Image (tube, rainbow, N blue to C red; front, side, top):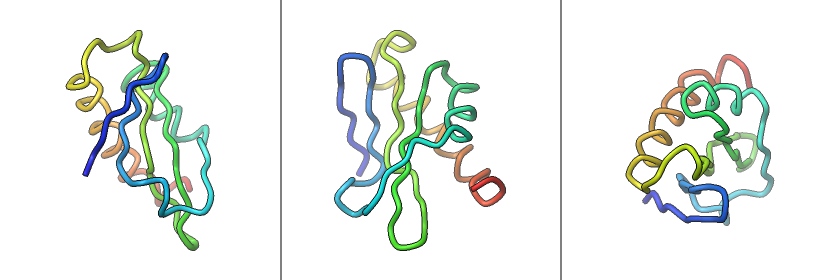
Length: 89
């Protein structure tokens, strides 16, 4: 279930719970993809075993005003990352 947390600077759209991962990264390649969809966005990826998956997507609050807008951008970013992941990760 997707959950949206609001921090001072970001809407954090949680795709997966962080407790299932052993390690986290915010890869630059994923950030470049996210930035093309919504400027300033970031993607946190978690490692479970040998596999890396999107854990959460951070959408800047200065770019969007509502949780609904943040979720819309997060879905677009998630789809693009999942399409691209096998090619660049």
